[in-house]
Length: 543
Image (cartoon, helix red, strand yellow):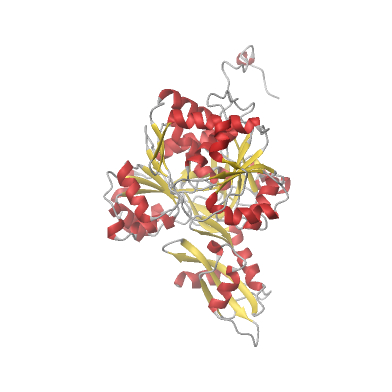
């Protein structure tokens, strides 16, 4: 029983000394302190922090007038545009929960997300009408559909709703008196996993975690005051690793980018003095391999944060030569994005390149705002020795771990068993405490920052009439980090070529999940008939 002390008497929580943590106050402060500072750049558009705050309040006001409030889900299917930034503030200002949908999902997956989240509103970019339309037809819910017409997009796409985004904002009050969350434990956003096993899981973030991870980005990324951030990372992915809220802390500038192209990235970095950006290894490959005519001299060294598979030494060397300082991060949707950083030691700069690459390959140590990170035995929960060889499961605990999975108590309990969040990633712990991943449970492949389930791809392959057995593993790829490689065993007397099998998959899988390589032959199996995937991984590594 907790013993009462003199500090427990007459020293209570009151509004004067306790307020719920929320990232929404970061924007309010930025607008008051730096009202004329440019907050958003998008093509010729320039919006100040006063503008961003007023538009976010308009959005909140308009949504509230239409009955949106605490616990309602507002889904958005948007590119990296000003509307997406405004949604990160305006939606939670109502008490509602923001669900940023992955623009790369197919109609069936989007319909599942809309139904599972019980979406009341869907804001959709005209570019994604081709998938949003069928998704709405498949979905059981009938959300209010709001069309966003981005002036920077001139491609095809129908309007699906009866209301335009700017018309919605015109209904709202720029001085709307939005309310703080009643509890910092209230949900702020909902992010769906990539559905690596069955349907996607809905990961629930709270205001407290979003506020803390946003602060953690400032400290870990050494952002300083008024950074200029280029949006190469999708804002739909873990709320842009919470950088959507982080930039307001330091009154930074959001430089929006609809499509990640090398020429556009170099141009925007040079024109606007970009200081920071994030992205998967594919973004680094685009920058390093850009033709000379697309490159532009950078005004200074640019900080680049990457997650997923550790970049090859050749890519790291190319990034250094191009003027980038690369930092390796690690995290999951369940940890609000990266919560682990490969904190670099200055003395490591003197190591030979191969030893530096070995250091860079490690995922690292916890963010200051993550309370616990360890590698433990998944059964006993005992820490593994810090010997760099003993395999265990990477586990986390702290305030930047999700509330849980929406409507999925069994998965939530399993994820939090023993008081730790079980990442499902297998790794080792080095003598200096740095964690390094060695394998992924459930055979998840991370390609271009997207999670791909080998099981899902295998299921599609098994349905091909000519295939007797199939196994999918990750194959290293300079551009994407890794891509699915399918080992296929054909039925006796059947024939099928690689092109035919890839075409079969293309009809049944999202494009980024397609196997890029098909290898024919008998699959290696154990005496009990289990495919020996470790042998296939070795073969895939060899090319």
